[in-house]
Length: 381
Image 1: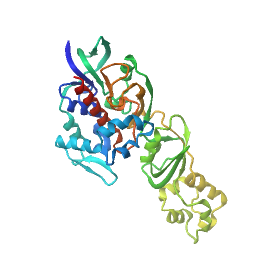
Image 2: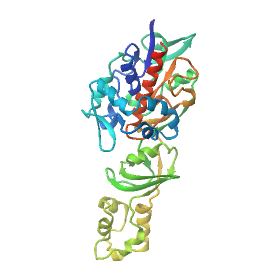
Image 3: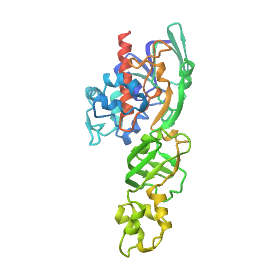
Image 4: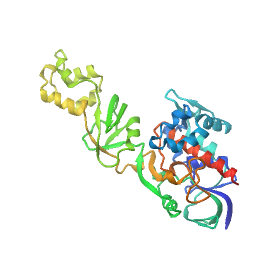
């Protein structure tokens, strides 16, 4: 039986980061490679963190601002960048504040963090604690550990290994699991949007209950996407109705348009909306501006100016960038990330019920929580 002081389970962002800080630990990864999900982030460029003060960064974690604060203030964006610099991987800040490696290659991030003792193709079957020792059974062997770190991720992008199965292990150790839902994902639309796939509309207003967002909207094969949709998706569970305005041009203004132009073309010139959108969403055909009826104006109102589609995230877990839900944060110390229920059990990264907005905030928390756990582990050795 192998005996180790510290065992890390999960070779994703938080587990790799901790392993690079604590090479004396052994990291168990069930895949034949580490960082599979990390390789996909930022379109393969890896949006490591986001520029800003710790106070600004904390504001991007919804209802978990208080919980994430100690970690972010301890190891915020500047320290994350400094750490990667110490690993010979420099970073740069894009105009939108997102931070990337200078190589724009996520493989370089994974390579920089792959420094510790990693055991591949090791699937953890069970975990128990006997006296003060963790007993870990894998498909290969049994391991005893003084300290155990669960860096097992959420349930989004299951093909990368982040399939949510590890939550049963955490549950067996006594932890409450907040129900899992996709976050930072596109939304399925129960409306006919055929012919709009790939179309991006700028200057869109999106409303859901008391939430109001403004930005760009991308039409997908069967739904809608874009940064604001991603950030809103965590709020959508069942079928919900959104209020979306694709244009700020009021319906009544249609009758003020002059000339003998084709109505669709005149509206395109007045609003800068793509012709493909107007031709797909409106049944005006070859009508001229002067021929528009009240019914035509109502169609524009309902399908462009105040479109109210029914949307859902059902079945979207495999496409969600992150998971909403996970281990209840009330059961974890926000300074050390040690379990309040099981001494010397640490839970970091996406395994926790913490999710941030799009823009590098989820990796920021993954790295910051790993660093906080590292400090606690070395202080208590």
